[in-house]
Image 1 (cartoon, each protein chain N blue to C red):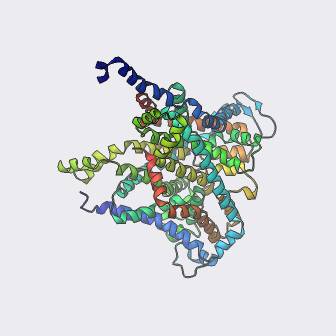
Image 2 (cartoon, one colour):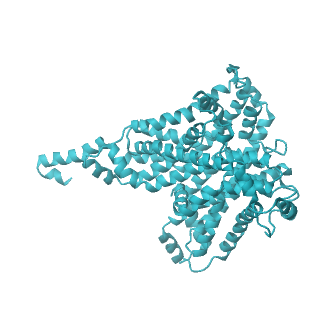
Image 3 (cartoon, rainbow over the protein chains, first blue to last red):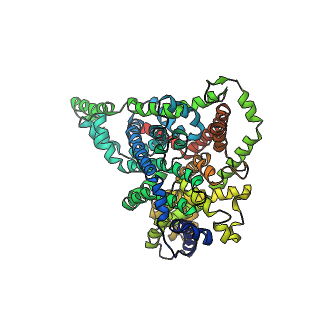
Length: 272
Length: 310
């Protein structure tokens, strides 16, 4: 069927490869060259000297702590979202009555709440809960704002489970809790994986909550650490870009080990 | 029903088996309560709160004072707000117009199975590994007029690409595209793979060429994904705060100060939380309107009605 090669599409894909590749090359190249060479030759030179000094500068500034904090926030956020969104989706898909429908509509509407629009009262709430300048002050709002997409993805997955299976479970006398654990969760594995990927990326990418909700250096996340580096290392671009590169390492590790799950998770989010 | 013709007791037995267990197994709304409460506290209550605060004067230290519509009359006379709204709209349109066609073409292309596509797709994925903050910082250095790409490739970027409003907006669109096209094209790649092959076979038997197949089969089949992807773009566009802060810092001047950026400056830089709440409320209205329109188009809300058949 697809025997004739599509040269036009191939050429377009090559153009896109250049657009994606040149900045990434410049990023890596700059991060491994001495500062003097960067100011002479710019970001897309041919590397002749390679140094790891820039990474040392970044590590010495305490960047690993930021990466650790971000990992903690991402894991905790994913755990909370799964614990809350799986039962919600189960109730939405299998429950009856206007209440469960109302819940679904509320989360649909919630899909569009921009976190910026509610950051002022949220700041007040986090303050009053005594969570300002703690990682919880980031985790809880991040989880709340990841719920709508998660409910959408999970309920979509659970809807695909056939009614006969639910009936079979019911005939065996299974309670809703048992049905959830032995039927729904295993059958919606891929939707759960998508939710994990999405939530983790959102936590990873988060900027506003860390910016507003924390203050001390030992509570900083990677994104905020980078933001501060901009003023701190304004003149030392190679060190700044080394920090940018290092900030991607944890996701890169996940990508190398769980490429299939990560890509499939994002692919599955679009709906048919 | 066959059993209707057989003996009564058997029929009764069957009816009970069919009717009773499903009512037993259905989870109640109680299952949704913990998540619902959590969402109400951290997302819905703040929505109400920001509307209330928009009618107050509040410096963040003393208790908020109710000032009626003072913030709102100031809001409607504030030219900066209208500039921010315009820039937000321009950025949104720019992002959709540039990203959507590129994502669709790349996604459909990558849905093929040749080996080179798998390798290229892996490379195309790489920008997704960087956070928006990392992406913005990287591009800020790349677009630096003295040391970055413009110093070497002036013919392509001009001498200072972020020096004018159009240039700065174009740069924001470029960087957003660079970062998020991989994501959107993944959505399309997944969707394009699930289009039944029989459609293409039937079309080629009818003599339809590649372009006709793309227009008459692929595009219509991708409709739902287009809407999902557009929802992500709109929500992303309305919340594109970090990229503006880190790439242009709202400049030149206030030329790229989109609504969330203006809101942030007003609240957390000049400590005028009341007026910032008015800007935030406006952002909320825009986002809600966009979401309602798009979910109507997508048929997401119809998912609830398909439940009735279950």
